[in-house]
Amino acid sequence: MIAIKNLTKKFGNAISLDGINLDIHKGDYVALMGPNGAGKTTLIRLILGYYHPTKGEVLINGKNPIKERVEVLQNISFVPQLPPPIKLSLEELISYVCKSTQIQKEEIIHYAKEMELDIEPNLGKSFFKLSGGMKQKMLIAISLARKGEIIIYDEPTANLDPKARDNFHRLLKNQNHPNISLFVTHRLDEMKDIINRQIYMDLGKIIDDEKI
Image (cartoon, rainbow, N blue to C red; front, side):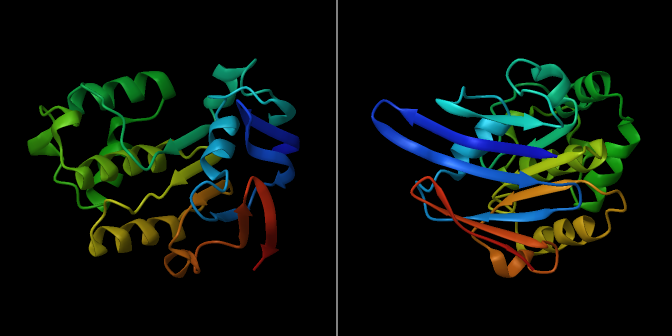
């Protein structure tokens, strides 16, 4: 589970998160919503251990994501809104992921094909030089293949065409292992058949937290 207690994050004098408390349990499929500047990205980065809290704490299955970073990240899959500038070829990226996470190449290839990514002809190409949609399909395929305990998607469909969005939602619905899925999204209409909880943030606070 994700346990967040009295979590505050300041950048200089600006308060990005203002003393929030939140528990997310296995089986929670959460839409995290709110306007730009609400604190959503800051919260995600604290969960991933990218930031140190100003006050309060984040625990992932009882572990601190900064002090026990390796153990925590072994159980988290993260797909950012903007794909990172990875210079590896797709073949090299898949090999790296397989060695570092003990998943099989065939699993990644399977999900890439399910996302209709034409992967074989592109294995020698640099991830960095692929289109935005192809990068996102690749990252989604890796995240689904890992079958992590916690999957975090930050606007995952932003670079996808309508057919790819449909494929992504179909794959999410067909997951047969219980986990925590956290979706930062402005497209609640797309996620309504997947999520069972919606959290709305504004000005660094949780304004609404509703089971649906």
